[in-house]
Image 1: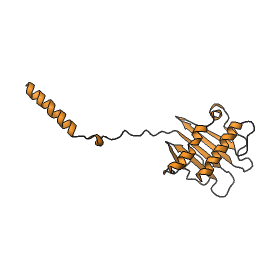
Image 2: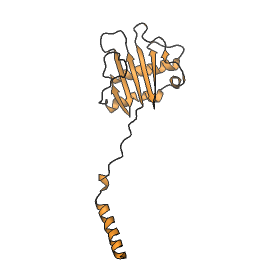
Image 3: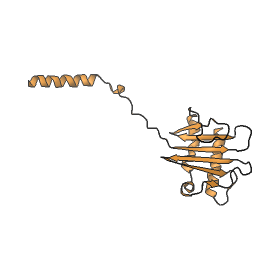
Image 4: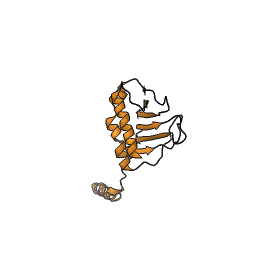
Length: 160
């Protein structure tokens, strides 16, 4: 009886090891995050391509699929832009100002009041999305926000 148990155990171990090669083990799924940063410009009074937005999500960069200001969810391309463009845009994640996160202000300056457009920023972390609209002119009371707005515009120039 001991012999049968030992033989059965040996056969089980041999067959269980030969049935699956190390390469056959699938990689664990990459966890996709719903978090994102959307940045760009929106012009209320214009005749064509009034909206230029980019979305950073899951270490990829996506461009908007809209020509005009949209209400509700902004459509983005399902195909990410090249990695070099993501590398340029991810600078914004590094320099994102703490002031935006801690202030209760969501509008800086007078965005698009005289058809000058606005810089649009949306940040989603977890279940919370926060949206800011920033005047394209300098905002004297908030130099940190002006610096970030200028960085957004600089990055957008590099992405074009």
